[in-house]
Image (tube, rainbow, N blue to C red; front, side, top):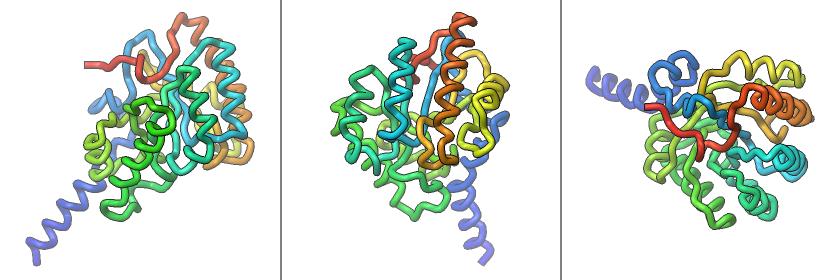
Length: 236
């Protein structure tokens, strides 16, 4: 029985152990690429949980006006229903990436389901846009052994984030989002925001939209380049 228990423990550790990288300081120290660190003078601007036709056009308008492109991590289940929006995002030069098929936490996914869902989301985005997808970010930033292997198997690089705005919170404001992002910034940071309130507090995207413009102002003043992960580079 002890051997069975030991084997079960190893399997559990292999599956749930990667979740430790949700701890920012550990991720930053041990896995800087997963932490989203790239070229020191570049900020990778990323948005999660779309596509959402109610809010995404406002973000697209802002980014177009500022001449900035970003990476949008999409939920596959919403892509085909909003195909025109997804095509527009790609046509504007934004990078589209996989956030999963749905927003379920990887830790509670049944065996083999996750692999199929990641591939289905990737294929759906690529079929709609006719462009390749290169990046993956799991919902909640929670990794599992199966998730790491599935993403790699399907040619996706997993990236979490360096700084976030906690913009999904009901108590967030444009000022709090900016302050939170700034507190986590490092040279070559990847910034996580949300262009929808689909899995956030109702209306929270409006605060994110205002905060995004303020952040772009700050980064302009600091002579930082802002763009998608595809142009972010990677640390050694």
